[in-house]
Image (tube, rainbow, N blue to C red; front, side):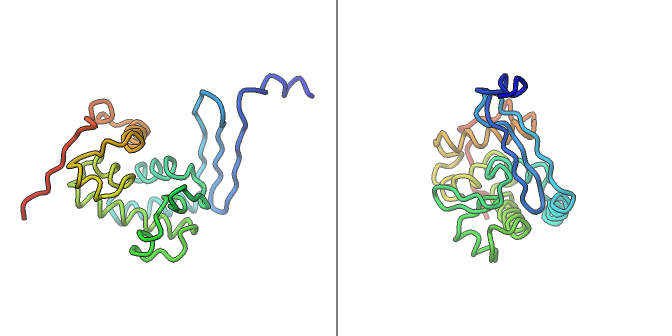
Length: 181
């Protein structure tokens, strides 16, 4: 074994994935969770286009894709969510996404879904993220961010990724009241 490789043993495994449209790499299995994501020009342009059309931050879209699928367009969750933005089959169908593993279709549908949640929850980003992760009904039923550890970690992780001032001050028990019509 090369002496140049030996010091790296036990530090983790470099994962490099090349899928049409992007390259993502990260070191897995270490305490250092840092990684590099290089989104291809075509996919980056698509994200920016969809972000502009729906009035959603491209950085938010990228942060959700990173959290949901680590940029793996073939990702499938234990619950059956699929693709880059991890759309559940029913959600994908309701959004007209025919192939949730197609990065462009998945992003288009995921951002449309995100925009609808933003409209429903008055652009309250922690609530929007909780609804994206746990479902809008969970946020409605709990009148705020559901008391699910995974959902609270998800919201916190994305807010930190976006480096928002709100990330330091957001209250996980944040409540939501539907505006009177």
